[in-house]
Amino acid sequence: MRTMALLATFLLSTVAFPMTASADVCSTVDVLEFDGNNANESVTTQVEFGPRIPGSNASMDLRNWFMETRPEFDWRLDPHHRGGYNLTNLEGKLIPSDSTEETPVIVLAAHYDSRHRAERDSNPDMTEQPIPGANDGGSGVAVLWELARIIPSLNLDHEIWILLTDAEDQGSNNDPSTWALGARAWAENQTQDDINRTDGFLLVDMIGDADLKIYRTFPPSLNNEEGNRLWMAVENLSGPLGLLDGVEDCSGSIGQDIINFSSMDGVNDDHVPMNEVGIPAIDFIDIRYGENATAWQGYWHTHEDTPDKVSAESLAHIGRLLELGLREGSWLRADVLEPTAEAPETTEVSTTFSPIVSGVVLTVVVMISLAFLGLHQSVRLKR
Image (tube, rainbow, N blue to C red):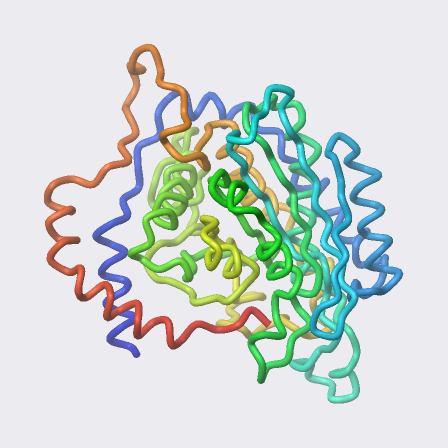
């Protein structure tokens, strides 16, 4: 497995290069509105509702709070009975007045439930008690809540859907089918027309860690064209925002090591059911929760998952990246973007591989398949 991991790192280095930020992107960075403090305050609000276990009053209170404070979206409750739970997904749509059945859709998603037990807690008397879920649940919702304040004023020419899934985090470690129940129900209910016009499903989960580090996740695999498109957009946006180590941001400062493409994390999260039905979906997640934490350790699934562990700065990093992508049209497929009248005088951002890189990729195509097969065996449930 170590050989496969090293191979994946090599392959990533051949297909991903930091791009130089153009002046027009930097002008957009200057007007970003995402407020990490607002988002962070909402984490405390969520935790104060109590454990957001499916079917609970706290779960209902969170849904009502989200809808009441973000009335610009057309909200719909989507109840299901699945896996022994009465679960409710919350879906909000912001649809332009001239939208048609072919208008592209971008979905911003997070799970809002908190885990029903703290099986990793150091206190054995507390392992059967529900966790606070400040980061695991609360952080993703916080980012979407703050984005939902901003998005209506952007006057985008495509649809934005916000999806809060239920029962992502209630599963049994011995049964993969018991996880991501709300996401599976939502994916199964999408029409083929809606699947075809969804250009991106962007999942945010556990992104509030003060020691934030986001790696590319799989699924989707390295040979997934749509996954590569979305992750390349992430890389192109990260540089101007100062989230790539060693790359100058728009202010000329050297970026931090926040978004990192040197290796991959295998995560089975709410994005997987989307990929399975044909919706391009990626997952922003930090599986190392806490300073110097290793994968799936630290504060994760313990009673230490409290609001004081969540960073307003980290929430802002992800929120600003998503907002910049919306303003720039980065999450849309290229064939739906309007062509510009003339090329800008500033450095052009290329999204194509050089002939040398293309040759390298072609020569290792078999190795890619073998690497993914090996890596796929190490995919860990987000649990």
